[in-house]
Length: 257
View 1 (cartoon, rainbow, N blue to C red):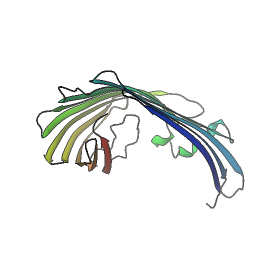
View 2: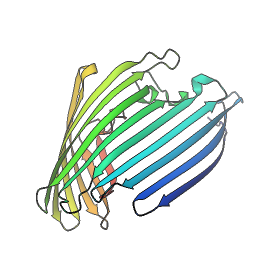
View 3: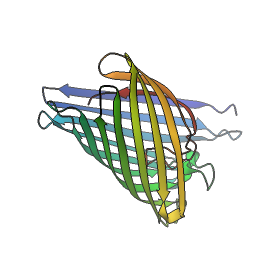
View 4: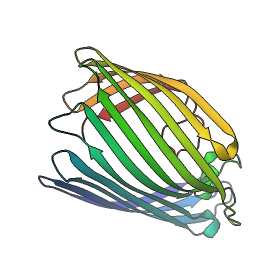
């Protein structure tokens, strides 16, 4: 459009690591001066972003993990152009030392998203939806042998969504996610992954299913990189309301927390 954008930002971050405790925080402030296409008028958007993360080892087998991310933007054109975002996560990770064949993660997430007007590209677009959700998830993996690992995930979302920024009439958006997974360590530092997935949406009277295939290469003892194909159109992240996830993907994973 030829419109000019002037952006000024400043940020600071700090972290602390000890034997059992690791915490990190970051603060960012940003100002965007944007010229309207063809009008010459300029609007100003100010944005605050706070990010926090926590890892605490309760015992040799249990770890507490958490994060809190918050963002707020204010636009000179009025409240209809403002945006808000909150993501709060608390979880317990079970990583046993002496019987390390079983690994588990229990996690709760609170999620709230009020997208800025520029993200609203249609009434049917997930990016235009105001969402507030409570999500619980359980993820378990078990080593059957040195080569085979099986596991699964169950997650439940009790959410509400609204498509109107002014008259915010929320309606219920519940979801159940079921994932069954198998990992095959077929060569030194190489893994193959297969998942069967089912997403149940009782309020929409809808069910979606599919599979996921992946191939991973271990890069050292704590990181692996993979490529694969998602045959389902949904994500295993229940805060994501889009159905545009079918296709190739690249993934970087931490093996241990």
